[in-house]
Amino acid sequence: MTKIGLLSIGAFVPEQKLTNQDLEKMVDTTDDWIVQRTGIRERRIAPKDMHASDMALEAARNCLRDTDITPDLFVASSGTSEKSCPYQASIVANRLKLKKPACFDINATCSGLVYGLAVASSMMAAAQYQYGLVTASEKMSLFTNYRDRRSCILFGDGAAAILLSKENWEHELLAVELGSDPEGFEFVTMGAREGDPYFWQDGQKIFRFAVNTISRLIDALKVKAGLEEQDHFYIVPHQANLRIAQAVADRKNIPMDRFIMNIEKYGNTSSASIGLALEEAWRNNRFKKGDTIFLIGFGGGLSWAGAAIRW
Image (cartoon, rainbow, N blue to C red; front, side, top):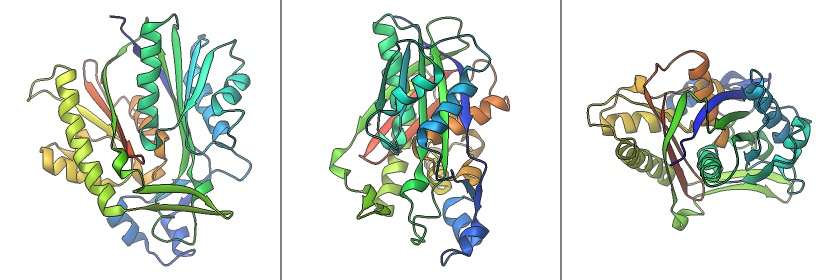
């Protein structure tokens, strides 16, 4: 079987910060309330003239910066693209000056980056593609109602990119696990209603879904990666709520220092969040050679996705 691995990772976040103290001036909330219930202290907000495709482009450029590689396969994950057509992958591929790549968009909400890795790696293993670029870029502020104190505290904007290769990689993609529970498709909704942005979720049901899903994916990925019960591993989860990770840690008896979290700085950036956390850990040399990393996404749909990587 053809082995696929990670060559590089890139990320991009806008400069503007929206802190909890800023939100205190906008809606009826407090810094303490937000931190205790979500773990978020600030998030990045893109200017009006910056689209999700612009952020995907910058993340891709950062990912490709130290290589001379031209991807021949490009998968773009986004639920907040500025256009239906041209689709995001074609916009970014044009600006990257890629030559006739296979490129397309996917939307699996917050699971999208891992879905993208699964799709790209499968296509690379089955066909002639040598290098696969996967981006996840979200302008969540586009659909955030800053008069709704329940949801406006959660979201930020950002993008991440991962370059996959059939050769000369250092970090092997060992296994993926994808799935969904369409019976819960209405538990998260987002869009525009008569021109006004909106986001709604059944918070209690999503919390239970997330804790159960992450716990189940940890078990599945341990088996697929060939780990023994005592083997060490790290988890890079979708950065939705710090309390979700803490609940999983308690249930599975896993130390919190094995959960890679940066939600306090960026909030919930949907499909970009796993990539932003992974890129930061990569840049800070958080992992050592031979470590096992689980990327775990969950979100609307209800979707889930896991990937195991050998560092």
